[in-house]
Image (cartoon, rainbow, N blue to C red; front, side):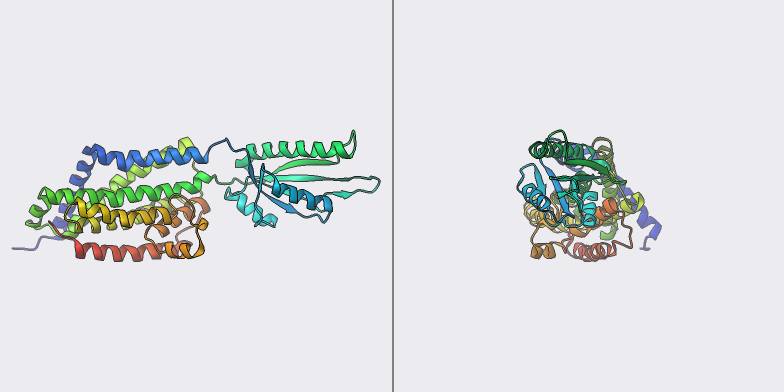
Length: 374
């Protein structure tokens, strides 16, 4: 028998890719968990991050004054229930960096002469400055009103008909990203898990149970052709799913992507192929659903909770951060977040690309070795 040409082999791949894609879109349950379910999470986390019911402000207090009044003001601010002062921020540069990442609502600047007694007066005075970014105008306006009220109470005790202490707002000529912009990368990671792992893990054992894969094993179809057709089909499905997520995120939650869209899309596709390899390995090895389900949960749940999907990894202890950095999903989410929120390019995220590429090679070697037709 003549060996089929590469063109015929790729034609077979295309046939199976189209077949897999059609089968997916006829499966309402698969459609729900791949497209609708991630959208539900998007609305939940988007609503949480865009809520307006906060009654406190995350601020930094930059004290440039040596006066006793300024020292007392900083101390009282830290004890305030309305102000949540970040004690790690001690310079204006640090405050601006935190505000650009939406980790702070504003920065309260106390200039050098704040709280000092001016010549010709017998009482301290000064003007505090509330510095904020364009995206935090509403929070800064509310904070300015709060400080104005507090200063008025102080002024009334010091002197009448004069306002020794005042506050002004200063808007930086830059936009900050919202908390949702950072959360969105994790939501994409969650969608990757659902599509790349649970898809093949649910489908392959069912095909084995029905004897479809066993019949395919008697044909000239090779494992690499079947894998490639599955990857192409899932990639097409993933594009639809991610497009839906991006459209809703942009229109409803005003998602702001700083980096290059093409690089973001290519890296997302790269991550999708990598995670899909885990699903191919698990689904290809498992004889039935009873084997596939517990093993997939053992692999999936650590990645969901330790890779920065639902909350930032910097909140974890250092030792746990060091361990979770090597999970397959971690460099993918980190790379997406760096491109989308910090405008990094492929050169900047080479460590994430390298680690993801290493996982891709290891995962697919395992997938080919453990795959069985029945």
